[in-house]
Image (cartoon, rainbow over all chains, first blue to last red):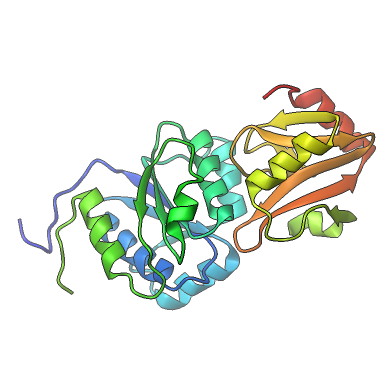
Amino acid sequence: MTSEEPAQHDIKNAILLLGCPEVPVQMAIALYMAHNLQKRGTEVLATGNPSVLNLLKVSDPEKHYIPKMMVLEKCIEEVVGKKRDCDLCVVFAHNDAAIQYAATMSYLLPKSRLVVIVFGRTPEVLEETITFPCEKIVDKAVHNPMQLKMKINEVFGWAVSRT
Amino acid sequence: MGCIENLKYEMILPLGASFRECREYVEKNFAEVWYVDPGSKIFDEYIIGLPPIALGLDGGKIVFPYTKPCHGTYLLRIEDADEADRVRKTARNKK
């Protein structure tokens, strides 16, 4: 197995639920996770508000990393209507609102693996408010995504890249 | 705020209140409290948050949390007798 041909895993589809885009690391980590999930055979859907989706569209104009995007309200509608589910749901949270979206996905998708990435300036405060079942990846990351990337690699068993 | 923005609403708590503070406010300040789960609809908008989500009713007025990714949770009051009756028929009065 080479670094270009990672082992396929059993996550068939994933939802990346992005929060408010005001913290820079979110965009970098979202693209990094989409890339790593896709090259292992996972179909990735990114969802968020129009601002965050526009950031993704500009960052990935040919949709190499995130081919599918959906406005958050539409995604919630499809999940509520049982038209959409996923093996993995990753929620990016640097504020209380995103924690509430994670709680919502925990309730609506009880069989999915839920990973909440808690970041920003005070992630430990936010982490304490999580009272629903999920895996948490917590890092005080605002501008520098490297430590958070390493923690994500550990949780998902991805090879550590030096780049 | 989607279609809710087009309704006549009052903001009960200042912007920046947490979802938990909104729930505590409703439970402490309203005699008639109903509960719904996330994904329920109020005024045709999906309600987001840790279940059970507390709604306060005062006659035809509904007080409910409305969460948006960048703005946080608003605790809003909107008067609509039909929607208040719908809540009474579809929500539960215990957590």
